[in-house]
Image 1 (cartoon, rainbow, N blue to C red):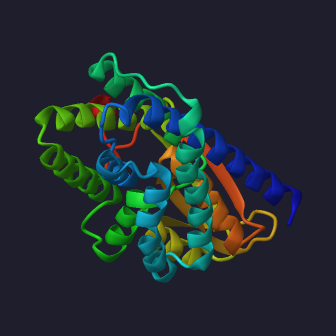
Image 2 (image 1 turned 180 degrees about the vertical axis):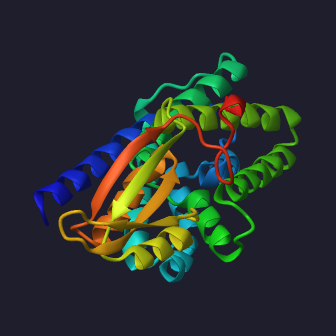
Length: 288
């Protein structure tokens, strides 16, 4: 491996460990003691834990394992291996830190708010590196792969909504559903702020020997539109096509890795975009 590859790998590992630890604080200190379901596989494990007292992290990992089998066919071995590694650290961190973290149960609304803020911060640190922790994130990717009409965000929201509603039925408590909705909403806002900052998007202009192959990978694996622009090298006089694409900030790392895997010599220009209107991007004035 090159020095750059090792550096990227170390940054990914540090991000997973730090993000997982921060998220474990949100779960063990705020959401779990108050039976607030934060969505995702952790939410399902929270419901089971309330009846069995089984470790939330181990249960979450066990619930995710069947998805990895499907992921092998949909995303491939390499991508699945990366997600599996992140998932093991992410879920087991919840159990490792549980004995050492305090429980806050004085005010459930405060717990819901801080659970969302701290949880969003932990997940945002990983999202900005393009890291997914499996669970319902992986399920949403698999579903949106087969049903292109359903976006990743739409699918993930629907899955989390079902989990929260089921939890409210199991607990026979509407308040638990409302507090869970607060936590999930705040988590989404914080993730967005951490991963996107104040930039609504990033513009990438990519000069590569394989523009067609790269475009196909971007459209199928990232569900992003791509424009090919005819260009000519001033020095070589050679005609070629430049890949022009706008993505959200947290998608940049994933796209850079995709480009480098296909063409290590590709030339990439990355710039900030203050506003993007169109499919896949919200209007800036509507963002929270």
